[in-house]
Image (tube, rainbow, N blue to C red; front, side):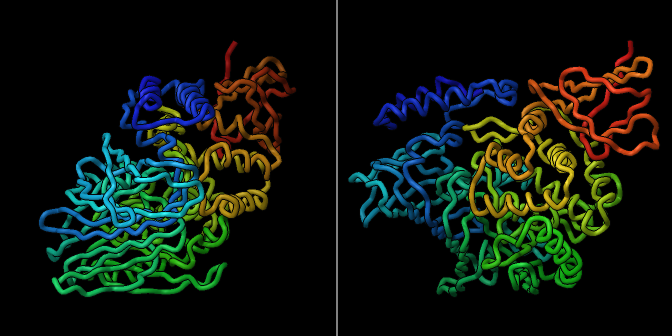
Length: 569
């Protein structure tokens, strides 16, 4: 739970003034929401700190402005493992203010904040930075300021899981540098408004590195500047909204090759940056893996979301990450996931898991982004489910179902999939495998594959290049499917248990009901009854006992992620 005392401290803190009663009511609502009755909140025993709240909550010091554009301009000192540079913040004022919050980890030093050629005063509290303006910024004003900073960023020991910078060497002893910061936060290495709800409309990433190393970032390469000090500056422009954690750098002695894909929206530029010793291997491996993936995902999800900025794979010294238009690739040119198949069916050994899964995030995660990391299932459940759709596109529907079902062996049911809101806390890792099976269950309930495909495509159309929430996604699926699936989503996302179909047999009567946590839960399910050779029929169990005449019943546990339990008298 979030400590109410922490939230009250924010309200009473002299650094944060609330100017009207409706804002007090708004924060009171947040307190109630943070301590409400939703299962994932009541079951979370983590003790959260004020630092967690400052990072995860949208206070008035963050909602007062909307980011339009960032220019991140940094230099990397490889020997010292340090960085220095600046971030230009271009913003629009959502309301009148004289103070705002940005974010930067406290191990990095802010040297100065410049606004209209003058230095601004600022204070720091944990990883939050409060900047004071000399006059009130008026609602609707478009303005900008620049934060200059330097220091040694956090260095990861196990990227991408613990987050941070990676300073490595390739097989020839040359520097090979990357960053992975999902979860840890982009403010671990550059100043920004570090909350998933606010994405810039565009971004310029300028990175200076020692020659002859090159840097690869998101978007398209706008220019390369040879400097007099033996360094080179690479300027990459991102023309679409991008989430902070997806902004990236990749430094190495790379070879570059390219291709094109004729897709739904025209010609898509494909660019690949790999270590020179892996060039031949990469050319063959990417050729057989990338275009089939794009064909499958454009069919199911709609056009690749970032045609102007292209599609890139960049070889990294860690396994992988879904950095927008510059996917980190470290699967060593092998099929499967580091040589294995998550499903245990063998179906995952004929394609490169990293390419398929991380590219799935271009639609779910990068195009559609959760406002709060607590809703990260929107990224991971759909991207994992995309693996099954890829299998289905290439090997048929039965194979796709078998792949998704095979993932169930990794489901732990340890904690809810939705995390705790307002404290930067994601939910259970079950968001991958359990979440994918939940989506396949939803598809089976809808029982119309054309409608299901249209739902997936329209999700990307309606929520693409935006941030969203669980409620918005669920409500949209309800509306477009014509079925109220809210309680189904609630059971899988907010509770650890999956639905259990309880069955009692007496004479020629079958009694059945759902055992679940959600009140008044109902979910249709396909069953065979009478004999095993019977056709599948749909019954509509609720939490109340119902009956049918039969001695035999068999539930479809291939397509519905449920358990069945025979209750003996």
